[in-house]
Length: 245
Image (cartoon, helix red, strand yellow):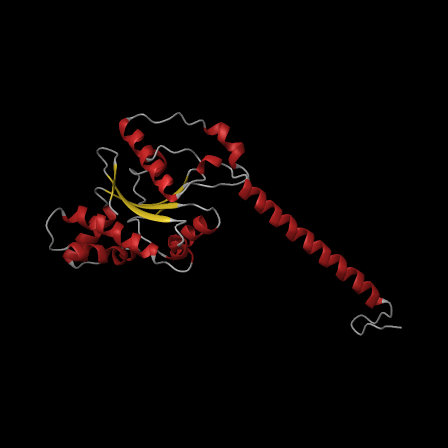
């Protein structure tokens, strides 16, 4: 007769074996159900029209901006979209934009709910949290495109220029913005043209390059041509987005 030294029951080994098999089968069934759900979502995305190549996604994004700038935006029936998006999302583009209240990517690109995966921080630069969000968009949502979007009259870049010129430290946590934006300001100092415009566009370029090289997820997706990173500059007066890179 077998004896379990853990619980002191002579019949326990047999019961433990049965319970172990049941637990294993339950875990296997749960895992299979999870895989099946993921496959079903992949086969039937929330918005099938958003499944496109990086080039097609960029074309769609810029077409939306053109409609917006011309005042020809589409009618957005948000109520009818809710049920389709309740079970998942597959945005066709991600936007890393500034927190500025005058720049709303959803409006600027005439997009519906579930179309854009938007991250915003004053100065539209990459930090660890922003990068993690982008990686989620690439690896989990399958988003094929990201635009780093700077804009005219950016207060974060302007404040960085003033802080550096006057050699003063901004209050609170604002110095962290200055630290992140300083490389762009330094790169254009002394060059011809509007310094604020130049620095804002340079900041876009620097962050595009940083994202392309971000290992392991983004850089691999870029190398496999499954993901594209571009840069844009939003004109507050016209509403048009100019490709920077």
